[in-house]
Each structure stands twice: as structure tokens, then as C-alpha cells.
Image 1: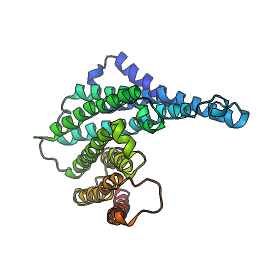
Image 2 (image 1 turned 90 degrees about the vertical axis):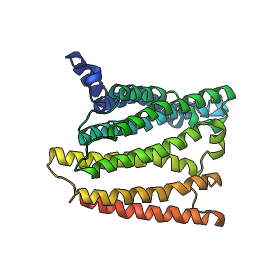
Image 3 (image 1 turned 30 degrees about the vertical axis):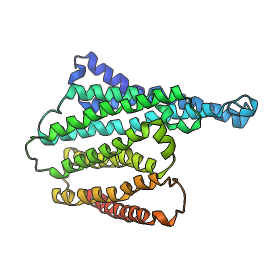
Image 4 (image 1 turned 90 degrees about the horizontal axis):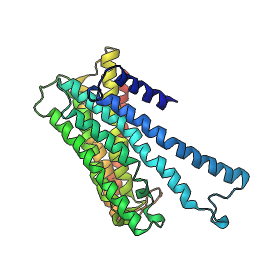
Length: 316
């Protein structure tokens, strides 16, 4: 219902004379997020209903003993699961565009292409769910299609990265460089994670690295850390605009590079751990990867400490 509300509200804005290309990227990001939820949540709901009927009424829809197909559940889950990634990151795209536009006192470079790129990401994001299932017995032709579409999604994403960089380039210096630094940290981590995503998009490489620490590093760089940086920047912006509370620029200039450095220390070694085929979600590891795990632990403790301090200053 909330997604339908957002879609109807945005459509009514266009009806009263506000042209689509004049809308802020933030509005478009929320609109596209709502569309993704409307398209994918019914599929997840149907999967849960089928699973519930299997458990409660013994329908055996996913039981291979009774001509059921357990792979069907994976398809139904990931049809929702992968667009959900873009449900989380698309609003962050809009926030980044808004903040760069506000603090550089200029329109986002290539505003219309940014909107087209977000729409392309939302569309292609609904068509690549099988790259989570390469190890489940997918045939070669299907792997080829999903490898192509997965790598193709890097094109609109790269367009957004370069447009953000061009927006900052040559802009007048802002006295709120701390928030701009948060956004630039988002761009750095998102670019690192997107690059490893192109690597994992290849079916052959993904089968070798599937369920290893490499996937953990990719996911956290591209989504988790990016969403956190966007949230920090958004909270800082809202506090200034709505509550007239301005975070200490000196504090942000000090903390953000430290957080970025600790994040890189935490997750960069995981790529090398993935190359050693270290599985994820295990409590132990061999002595040969002790040094990499020590670096990860050191960085994780640094991130925790810095986040506690940053949360204290934000809520102060």
C-alpha cells in the first residue's frame, strides 16, 4: 500500500504540469523503489504461501519426491531477493545526488541521464536474479544470458559514478566539506564493490568464488557500507535543514577518513581470503590465512569504535 501511495503521488505530480525531467533524482529514486517493491513482493508472497502449504497441508510443491522442484523456491526467492538490493541502494543514489547538488550549489551533472540510469538499473535488476544460483545446476545458455545482463548493469552504474564526479569537479568550495566527504566516501566504496561485482557476474568465476569471503567483501562494499554512508549524510542534511542543527565540520573531516580507512582494512583482505576459497559463515580457519583474518578483525574493531563515537556526536 505504501509503494502504491508513492507511485500514485509521483504520477499525480506529473499530471499537474511538473515535467518528468524536472523532478529531482531523489523523487525518481523513491518512485523506482516503489515500482520494484510492487513487482517483486507478490512473488515473494506467493513463495511463502507455497512453502506454508507444504509445511501445513503437505502439498509437496518443493519436494522432489512428489515431482516438486526445490529449485523453484530459489527462483521465487531471488526474483525478490536481488531487486531488494536495489530497493535499498536506489534511495541512497537519490540522496547522494541531492546532497551534491545542495553543497556544490549546482545542478547534478547530466540530470536526465542520471534518471535514465536509475530506471535502467531498476529494469535490469529485475532480470539478473539467476546469478545467485549459478551453482544450482543452471544450463550453459542460461548462464551466458545472465552473465551478460549482470555485467551490463555496470554501464548505467558507471554513468552515475562519473556524473557525480563531474558534479563535484570544479565546484565552489563549500564550508560543509564534511558532508561532501561522506558522499565521496560512498562513491569510493560503491565503486570498489561494483568492480568486484563485475568479476562475480562471470558465471565461471562466480562458481569458483561462490559462498566465499570474496562475496562478503563485495556485498558489504557495494551495499551495506554505501547505505550507511548515505544514511549518515542524509541525517546530517536533515538535521541542518529541519532542526537547524549543524554537525561539526571539523569532526566529520576527522572521522570520515578514519571510518573509510578502517572499512578498507576490514573488507579488502576478504578478497584475498576468497581467493583461498575460505568459506563464509564458519567459526574457524587455517593458519595460512591468519594474517588476513587479523587485519579484518582489527578493521572491524576500529569501525565499531568509530561508529559509536560518530553516533554520539550525531545525537549530541
